[in-house]
Length: 87
Length: 111
Length: 243
Image (cartoon, rainbow over all chains, first blue to last red; front, side, top):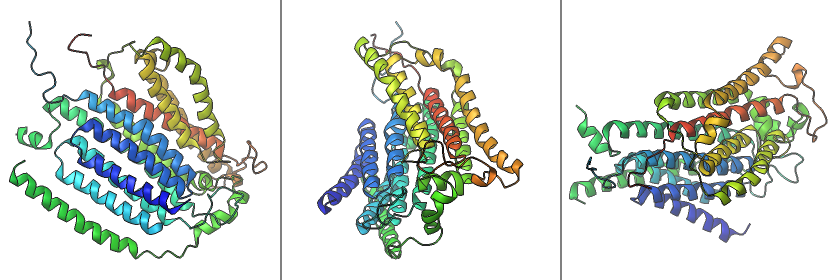
């Protein structure tokens, strides 16, 4: 495993976490969190931990992202529909 | 490679902590919590790594890495997923009750 | 953004950076002597003989530290109870509106292979990387996929909440039953080979004593629990602008 690839992976990991933290739109932050999870799973695989990498990949991309999006779709977003007239 | 892993984990932890402290939206708080948990898992797995090692599956083809941090990390990943789901359920209920997901407005509306 | 907000964010950033420097000095003081010592060295050299499992991490999780895995299953159960208490089931609408016809037929062809993949991960957990947690989460993600493609009415007819409760309780009872079997025989709670479970030849499918049973129990519990979490939290949002 060449050193350039490992350095690139860790820099991308830190970049994805900064993107998840600093972006104002919630949907983009959730997608950045999902990317962060996949990169973390790759980092675990490089560290010779196949069980941990499998668990992190499946849980982060399957359950965490789905539950985040399910919760985000339930909230009222400001300025989306406004007050509807009843007639 | 160990120092690279440790330093990136510290940076991610500080990013998560800043997200929890300085962002008003409750979803951002949960994202920050997830980042902090992930950085701790990275530190744990990196601490058991031996350069030039093989995964801990018998029969080994070389020196096996430490399997004990992997067992801790498996449990911690699943427990982290459960508590993030619980936190998101609380946010949905708060939003239904107060109409907003902004922590400053919720604190101002109470009382 | 006004000046107060900018000042408060600057203060948080300075605090986080100083905390990060302290953390880094603490981590840099760890000794990295690149050897495996202590209990982990005993597990690495003796686990295939003492437990019959080739996957050392599975042997640690389900034989040497099986009580911690029981506690972790309890944590998942508590989280599922908390979420199910917050959302009453009577208020959830069931819609049969999924994706298009091509997607339904395609996923209907792929679905048995996904289930076979999950079963392979669960059943060979003691031989290769995998086990109960990974396979159970794949099963929960499969039910999320079914909800996206076929609509949430699919779940209410094929796998209603009472069936998922039954599966989760069955997993917990299987785990506790395997542990109590060791207690009844006389060697201790959750003991593996010394309680009489068949050891088998290391490297074959039917080996490693009670570890396959514990894998199945944890997979049922984790899969049913995470699926219940997802289905409690969705609610069909009516499209107010007309569809």
